[in-house]
Length: 176
Image (tube, rainbow, N blue to C red; front, side, top):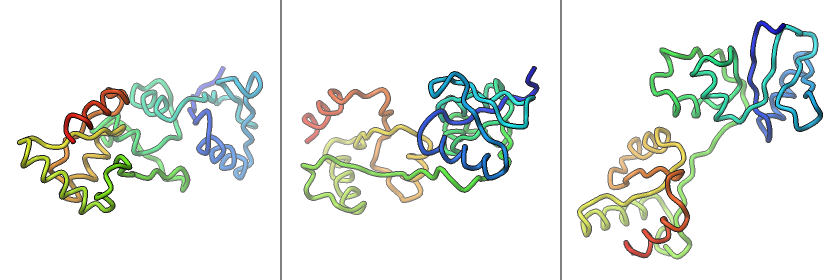
């Protein structure tokens, strides 16, 4: 019976990097039930139960205490638990799985090609409408941190998960 539960990413680049990381250490991960199973075995460590989850599920499982160890993005952990340092011990960065924070605008915003241009548009919007320009994001704390660090106070963060493409298009038309 396993005494330790380890959660690793179930797909993509992070999964591949985890497999390579363990293989380099001499512990081969073998996925149960073919390629579609959500459990794996770590060669040479029968007391470790390996769960294959999405990166977000790993963060949530660590915070909830459902798993003992996990490999996921620090950004996801910080997003899920702002008080991270009092709840989770980050053992060490593994040197893979870097994330980029990007800013994108519709193609028809032909006059916006730099962050300074975006600042100008946001300031004009705030002046004209007496409120900040709403924009979508998937990771509020990361987006907010980047925006405030760069002094962008005219942006209003709106969860992209709560916004459908239709709603975003309606906002674009209404506030153009």
